[in-house]
Amino acid sequence: MATTDRDYYELLGVGRQASEAEIKRAFRRLARELHPDVSDEPDAQERFREVVEAYEVLSKTETRELYDRYGHAGLRSGGFQAGHVDFGNLADLFSAFFGDDLLFGGRAGGGHARGADLAATVEIDLGEAAHGVTREIPFEAAVTCTRCGGDGAEPGSEITTCPSCNGSGRLQQVTRSVFGEFVRTQACPTCSGSGRKIEEPCTECRGAGRVVEERTLPVEIPAGIHHGQQIRLTGEGHAGLVGGAAGDVYVEVRIRPDERFVREGDDIYATVALTFTQAALGATLTVPTLDGEEELELPAGTQPGEIVVLRGRGMPILQRRGRGDQRILVNVLVPRHLSDEQRRLLREFDEHTDDRTYGKSEGLFDKLKSAFR
Ligand SMILES: [Zn+2]
Ligand SMILES: [Zn+2]
Image (tube, rainbow, N blue to C red; front, side, top):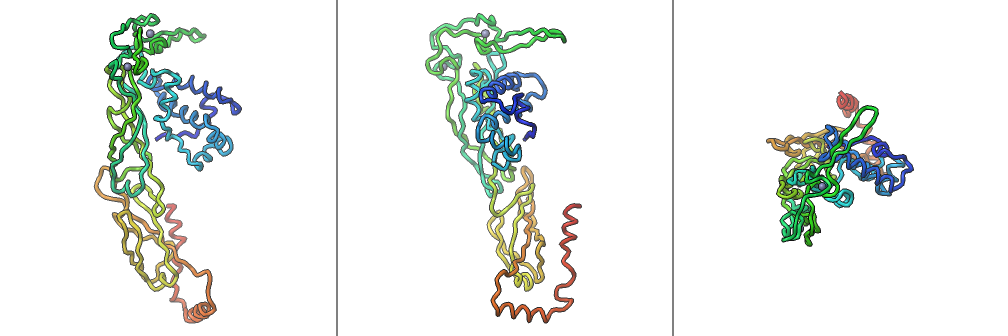
């Protein structure tokens, strides 16, 4: 998913000293202009995302302070994930700003507009990502009001043509400048693009035609899913306008960091610690894997920095057969506190070593070089 490192103040077109109200105003203006359902600009969706992200950060004192002091890096270390804007939580904000016209797709005039998509998130752990899991995901979606069937009018009351737009749902605004004349078409503000005037609003939905409902859906998360990937639930989003199709739900999957493994693509990394005597004499150790545990046999003379590869023990490869590998970095523990007796034994041991004991330098430097090749 796209993230931006562009300056948030610049994105909103406000100064660094901008007040809360100024930020809100700037966001409102830009969101209206760039909303992908309204704007025909090819990059509107990307710019809209950036603007929403900037607003998410600058509208909250906590994140704004973090950003002012440390910039994007500060937000990331503070746990804010740029680009993972929760549009679901913004739904309230949008309806407060724009009425329902953006929340419900916004394309003016049709009267059958498709409902807007909505976003939800789910957090799973690495083991669940490795084996796949089904989760119940709660979210709030606008559904068609059952009292008025979605037209927003109290049953039995009259619906007439909107006098502002004569039923077209659109208004044209002509701007003249030195470059010529610009005609902008926008949704009629009187009827929010429906082209109709409701004489008596439905008592259940207050004329909106939809009501917000708390819903829960089971979502199958496939084995091998990556952090930040989305699962689309087709047709489960906000209801459309009068008979229009419902939008979709995009569930973003977040994978909690694991204490034992670090994931890199389809491979996972872990560490194992040997005492220096185990390393010298060889040892069998139990190491954690995604499937439980495994016995790991380490030969005599195992060196720190060696990587043992367990083939096919990594993450399943999404939508394909096979799995990545588990790579285990070997650490060797050197004693920190020795008794007199231990010290004596080690000195004695040292007296019995010769050139063959340690062999050639273990080539850590070569490993370092190959890591950058
Ligand atoms: Zn209703
Ligand atoms: Zn109108």
